[in-house]
Image (cartoon, rainbow, N blue to C red):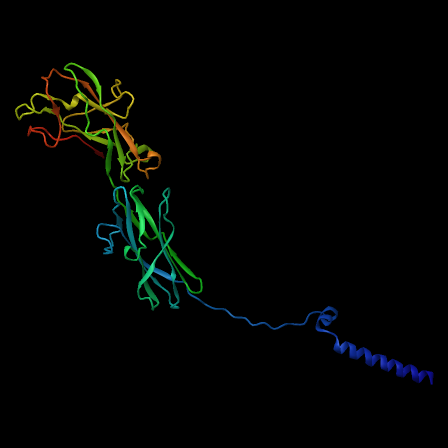
Length: 334
């Protein structure tokens, strides 16, 4: 009887054990028996990035004609609006118009603009090939300053599609910024030497203060500049003498320099000459935005000797009564 009870008891325990094992959680099974395989879906979306097919920069004298002449003519002492147009294609037809941008860059120069300019779609805006424009009509033109360096610049345009794939072209988009030579006299014009005496020497004028309103860098070429400040001088004619510029005060009696302290120091100046354009190599007139006078230069003049002339006014000017007088002196950039 005891044996039968033991068998029945053992069978009951085994049944209970089987029931517990069959109802154990999946996590416990994984712990006791190891993880079982789990199903997962797999998908890939194929998306082609947009491509930029053409870029045109229009900053010449005829804006928005997009004539393919990739040059920019800057404006003196002000901002030039430069227009950009480019075509983009997306074979999936999902261009994101809001991501169209353009920017100009050149090593050593400030990016124009600092943050890429947003462009707008102007044609084909519901197709897979669209034309975008950063231009004056939409107030999205890119501004370039009068002091921006001349030479080759890079235009980088960008466009993304609605899935985030993007296209960017910069190395093949180039244009040229032309050289702008433009100056303004701040003070010291007209040039005068006051009352002088025959036989007198070393009369200095007030400094001619000049502002550089362009991107011509009148600093030594060896330092990366473009060239020199130049003076074209003419003999000073007697304003009441017969019309033959006799007598005259020769232009060769004057010299020019950057010595504003004592322009008549021996060896400081460059001698001028009648009708000749002379480089004044020691005068610097850098390009700049005007901060701290970074685009200001000075030319100092000295009347070295006064010949034996009769008392009168001797001058060089556009409205001189002597028709043989060459005209006013001119100061410019090479």
